[in-house]
Amino acid sequence: MRLVILGGGGFRVPLVYRALLADRAEGRVTEVVLHDVDAARLGAIARVLDEQAAGVPAAPAVRVTTDLDEALRGADFVFSAIRVGGLEGRAADERVALAEGVLGQETVGAGGIAYGLRTVPVAVDIARRVARLAPDAWVINFTNPAGLVTEAMSRHIGDRAIGICDSPVGLGRRVARLLGAEPRGAWLDYVGLNHLGWLRGLQVDGADLLPRLLADRDLLESFEEGKLFGADWLQSLGAIPNEYLHYYYFNREAVAAYRGAERTRGAFLHDQQARFYEEMRNPEAAAFKTWDATRAEREATYMEHSREAAGAGERAPEDMESGGYEQVALALMRAIARDERATLILNVRNRTTLAELDADAVIEVPCLVDASGPHPATVTPLPGHATGLVCAVKAVEREVLAAAESGSRATAVKAFALHPLVDSVSVARRLMDGYARAHPGLAYLT
Ligand code: G6P
Ligand code: MN
Image (cartoon, rainbow, N blue to C red; front, side):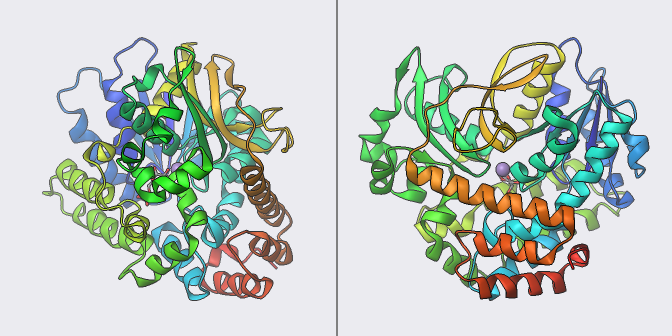
């Protein structure tokens, strides 16, 4: 079975390869094709994979290419993990927004819109090529903003575009552990959009264990989301929000922390990864060791500004294992390729799951997956406040998709202006101007 990874020179590819190396089952991936627009990055990552494969019998063969069509031909699965504009682009997304006093996170608020505006046209081009060159392939999208990008691709390849994110899994795992439940055996009543969802129940053998957690203040404040949001707010909500909702519920504090930081997340990762890829130019450098040390530092500093704003302290060691994202991708691929039924939280088209959204809106929801693909499960309806946010953000995503399709700058301004975290139409206009100046990839908007 052949897996193609777009953004194959990307930093997280060795995590995927590690998961593939551990898979010994029949029908596993035997061939990996890495595609990237940057040959030097491909070379660096290929060296890491080579060291990972040393001594592993029948390790999946790795091939690299900078030719997209060649990469896609004959693919069974495509992982799309690209970053249009690179980490420099991510840092600019943050900078321009912060200069206007609003959040510039890569998936939430103005930053997510800017990133979406330059990523959607590229993702659509990829989806069209997949439809032509590998019509039976499944595309598993990791590219952020993951829900929006998956929806853009689904307009061309339908339900063969599936988005993944590890944040709901991480949340479910933390809550299950706290309640003494086995994460795999627990049913998560979770729904929303990517980075905008709520866990409303955790069922084991038909019993909902979440009320026990919500009633126990000490237990509530003992884990990541509890530390970020505080017990009072979680009790008021009666649910555990995805960690990215911190940017909504504590927006002022998050913006202040980002503004006060020496470097934004994007700028930090940019410098960190530039060092890694630079070191890989030295043929003597220990590729895996260097990569792994860089990865560990990235994990340890994940969401550090939000944690700082909330006084949440350091991350828990078990949250830094990293094993969410590639495990979801592998489980999804297995379920489809081998018809091994699995329940996974994925970004797929709504169908009739959330009554307030249309059938084609991509949402994040537990799905039953088998050889025919993912099927959204029935979940408890969202309360009004959550529905309000989901509908507002989906409306923004739709404006981004419309702007990307038409090239209309006015529509892009509308996307910024309608976002709940952008507080004025004048700010939206200035954001558009600032982003157009910062990103050559937005020149198509006129
Ligand atoms: C989580 C999020 C992803 C994000 C990743 C890395 O897993 O769900 O969407 O890409 O963290 O975040 P970072 O800030 O390190 O790039
Ligand atoms: Mn994510």
